[in-house]
Amino acid sequence: MSFSQDLLTRAQPTMDAIMVHPFLKAIAEGNVPDDVLNYYVEQDEHYLKDYLTITALAVTQTDNHEDIAKLLDVAQFIGNESKAHEVMLGITGHQVENWRRGPETLLYVNHMYESAYRGTYADTLAALLPCAWSYEVMGRELVAAGANNEQNPLKEWIELYAPNDDSKSYTIWRFEALDREVAKLTPQQQEHVAQTFLLSLEMEWRFWEAAWVQEKWQFNI
Ligand SMILES: Cc1ncc(C[n+]2csc(CCO)c2C)c(N)n1
Image (cartoon, rainbow, N blue to C red; front, side, top):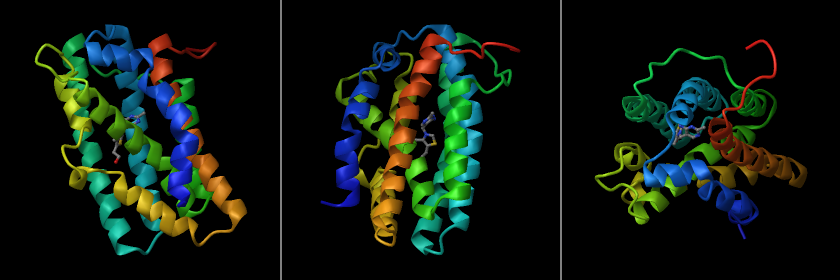
C-alpha cells in the first residue's frame, strides 16, 4: 500500500465528519446563516493569503520542475477564490472588514508555517494538501447530491470547487508528489509527515466549526 493510500484510510473518519458538518449541510441546502458566511469569508481572506505564502515557500523547497509549475498554478487558482468569497458576500451584503484572525485560523496557518519552516518539503506538501483534497471531495459530493441547483444561492460557489473531470483535479498530482517525496525519508520522518497531514485535515473540520459556532477570543476583541 502506498503512503498516501494508507494516509487516506487513516483520514477517512475525519473526512466523514467534515462531510456531515452542519455548515456543509447548510451549504447543500442553501441556507447558511449570514453571520456564519461573514465569519467564514473574513477568516478565509486571511487563510488564503497565508496559504499563498506557504505555497511560495514550498516552491523554494524543491527543484522538481513539474512541482514548481503546479505550485505556481495553485497560486493562480487562489486568485480565483475571491470569486468564491464574492458569491457569499453577495448573499449577506457584508463587506470585508479585515477582522482579526480567529483562534482556529491562527492555529491552522501557524501549523502550515511551522511545517514549511521546520519540516521537510514533504511536510509542507502534507500541510497544504487537506485544503485542496477536502474541498475537492466536498465539491464532488455536493454536485453529486444536486446541491448546485438553480435555487441554491451558493450554486456558483459549489461549482468552483467541483472539478468536472480528473484532469481538473488539484489533488492527484499532490498525492503523487507526496509519495515520491516521502520515499526519501526515514520511517520516523514519514510518520511526522502523516501527522502533519492529519492535523491539517482536522483543522479543516475546525475551520468550518469555528464559523458555525462563531468562535471568538476570550479577551481583547
Ligand atoms: C480553510 C480553507 N480550506 C480550503 C479552502 C479551499 N482552497 C483554498 S486554496 C485552494 C487551492 C488549492 O489547490 C483551495 C481548494 C479554503 N478556501 N479555505
